[in-house]
Length: 186
Ligand SMILES: [Fe+2]
Image (cartoon, rainbow, N blue to C red):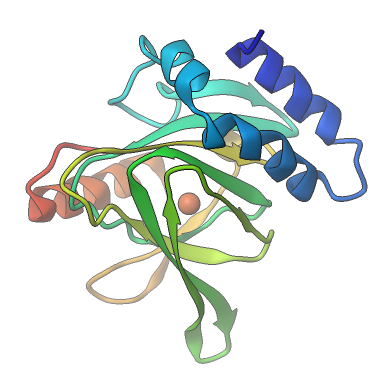
């Protein structure tokens, strides 16, 4: 029977695969293709608050987050510095993926991840995510490391400058963007 604990166990086993991100994507594909059990398992999971509040699992080599994006929100461009898998089970998450170059960020891909779809991001990817629909977007985000314990970066939407994503600075930017979207804090 499906449970969040069994999902975490499967993801942990995937870490010993030669391509752990692709293996995690394979594990999540059937889960989000028929998301009834996943939705039920996450019914009482927090939808608001910090990433730490919404972490389903946190260890040195794996993080699972219940990612809920309010309608209309657009995130700043940010890195993870580890592979990531987005497994969408409700709504839609629009991704713009960039790579860093000496002249700044260069767009390399646009991808709308719809309910039932899984998307893999490489370790060096930078992306921006948005919820274009009029309802929340819900997903499981899996990361190949300790996302919450890693010093990451974001690009200030106003200045375009790369900055260290301290929790305070990131939440300030998210609140500003959330207010601009007319939604709640992500
Ligand atoms: Fe991200």
